[in-house]
Structures are given as structure tokens and as C-alpha cells.
Length: 423
Image (tube, rainbow, N blue to C red; front, top):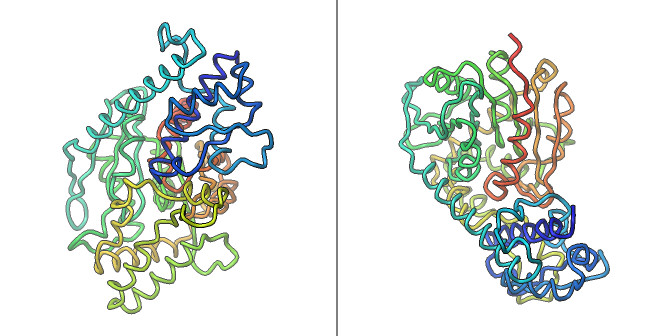
């Protein structure tokens, strides 16, 4: 890359990092600078300090140049990591401003990225407002959504959502994928009012019903959180219908495995599930305890601790996801149904089938996933003959919402490499 390309990558890195941090903690940059290595800035412009000032003015934050990498926090390292890669923005997209390296270029990139974000918000809102389609399933009717246009040369992407979750976390990624693929998604049944808790086999049956309703003979499975077990069981029953699998922050967790690399959240959640199913009367009390466990916000009034504050902020979910994430804990009956489903899922050991999955499988984990242990999925992907693992630096369990551009690019590259079905 030449100096202009490196500068564009740096500006994209600052844009993405600032947006991601502010979505979690809007006031973070009121209390902390963004630290960038002097060598990083010097690769983009002859005067690192002047460039730092221009970037800070453009993105409403303080950019501090440092010489010692040890001074970088987790937020700073995330920006540095992004700056070392290829950016989203190309100079020829910026018109005349793309030929400058001063404030005009900084402002042009910011405007370009802000416009891209605005378009994505509109597309995501259209996904959210799309009228649902419905299919009859055992015990009722399943509502699902379809985004994107059918393409005879591209099998659809079928989202296998986390138990208890709605589609809110998916809208951004769905909108980006739908530019090239048809995307089918729904909220798993079993936790809603007047719904009976479903077992793994029921979730697989729902998947079959949707594919049949849409006339889909084969598809790519995009499975989040608990979704990989549905994906693997569906493949066991109908391997010819699966072209590839993406296991996104997924888990093949099992009960009674004390040596497994559980997160604290998983251990607490299992204890709560056992308690609630043993004594349903506890459900309303327990939901208040774990339902509020969304992360620890930094206390900027305390003794300065930049390293800890940065890690706390990156581990938080985005503020606009709070309502979605509390969905399984909405009330006592919902939590009881959720607990019963989780215990059923955790009792099913499906990994023995992994060696028979010959289609490409991509596992994506987040460095800061505090919900589903990333080390477990990184280990388990080794049991798939065509498995590959990618860990996203600084990402959480909700990367599908926080990192839509990064994930869409990663998934599109993966899907483009999937060969034709072996008949």
C-alpha cells in the first residue's frame, strides 16, 4: 500500500473503532484518548502529530501519539489492528478530496463512512419491517422473514438464531448479506407466551418446514450461539441439503464437563437453569439476577485505570441491544421455558457426527466473548474435516450486530469459495 492507502485504512480504523466504542459507552472518549503509535501515523503522513490532531478534530476525540506499544489499551490495539489491514474506503470513491492528505481527506472519509452507515441503517430497518411469512409447524405457526432476491446460482443463507432471541441483533448483517444472497431467518419458538418449550428435534423440524415452504433444496447455514447444534443435527439427518456452515460465536457445550472452558456466564446460567427447573417458583426472582448481567461499565470517577476501562467497554454489548438481550428474561414463564430448552440443548452431544461433515465449516469467535466460551469452539472446530477458525480481535458475542461490515466481508469471501454441490 502507498501512503494514501495506508491513511485511508487508518481513517477507516478510527471510524469503526470510535463507532463501536460509542455504541457501548457514549462518553468513553470524553474521558480517554485514542492512543496510536507514532510509527503507525508516520507511515501515513510526514508529521504524525499534525495528522493526530486532524483525525481527532474529524472524529471528535483526542488522538494521543505514543512511542511505547505497552501504553496501548485494548481499544487502542483494536484500532491499530484494523489500521494494519485493508480499509473499506478507496480514494477514487472520494472524488477530488481523495487526492489530498490533509483535513479535506479526513472529512471526506468521515462523510463517506457516515453515508454508508446511514444506508445500512435504512436497509436494516427495511429488514426489520418486512412482512413475515408463515408456515404451519407442529404445535402452531412459525413466522419467518426473507431478505434479498432469489438467485438460481446462489443457495440461500439460512440463519439459525440463538434460543430465546429475536431478530434484532441480526438486522445489520442480514441487510449486508442480502445485497448478494437471499437470507431466511426467524426467532426460535419455545419461549414465547403460551408456547411449549421445544427440544432440539423440534427446532430441526422447524428448519425443515421453512425450507420446504420456500422450495429450498440446499442452503448455507449461519448458526449463532446455540444454533450450531441445530445445524449439526440437521446435517446428520439431511447432509445433501447443507452446502456450508458458519458457526458464529457458537457452542457445542455439554452438561457435566467440569474441565470444559466455560465462561462465568455459562456457569451461572446453568446453575440458574437447574434451580428454576427444579423450583419454578424461583423463576421470577432468578430472572432479575441474571437478566441484568450485561457487563460492567467503567467508573470514570474512580482512580484512573485506562487498561481496565478499555476492556470493560469492549466487553459491553451495544446499548441498543439491551432490550433484545433481556428477551429470555422477560418474565418468569419465559425464563422457565428458556431454562428447560437450554438444559435439553446442553444434554445433546452431537460432535461425534462432526467427522462426517465434509462441507466447508467456518467457526468465528470473539476475543472478548463472555457468553459462549471462544476457546471451546476453537477446539471443537478441529473435529470437522474442512473446518477453519477465525478469531475477531476485541469482538464480543454480539459481533453480528457490532461488526456487520467485517463479518459480511468475511462471510461473503467464505461463501464465494464454496464449490458446487456434489450430486
